[in-house]
Image (tube, rainbow, N blue to C red):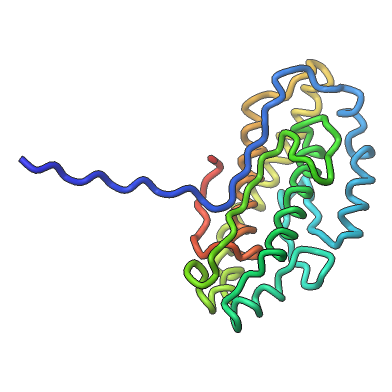
Length: 217
């Protein structure tokens, strides 16, 4: 008797995000004043021209910067379209700015109470896989990815609203108990993870693999 071959295990998406759950009491004072304490970080991000992650109806929002100083998008579209290349130093810049932005968003979302570092990983583990442009990226795909991702945009609007509500509830929970409810924590991280995958597909252009409709890592 022959045995049917096992179905292949799907490979993980080339954009991953995990945030360590703070299994301890969070700082209630800094949590109370979190919006004000985050202002310097957001000024730095604005000066860099990076995407502004807002904790609200669009969590996270997208990088659409077109010039040096923010996330490289249009230059990458042209480079992939005409040269079939993704310069490594452009990738490193996008990766570093994405990590810094996510650390800042996580701080504002109360997920962690360590002040965001500009270079250290801290408790926010984000990774993007550097693509082999010749083999992995279709020449014309950057022109239509943003359009193909429209279903994700609509879903992320509603998920962002839900995440914002969860953050407000968590704010009160931290003030009274010092803890971020684990279920709310996982949901907010899941929304950010979903948004990261869409961003990696449509704007960072590191993959042609369509992002999954999932909060899971």
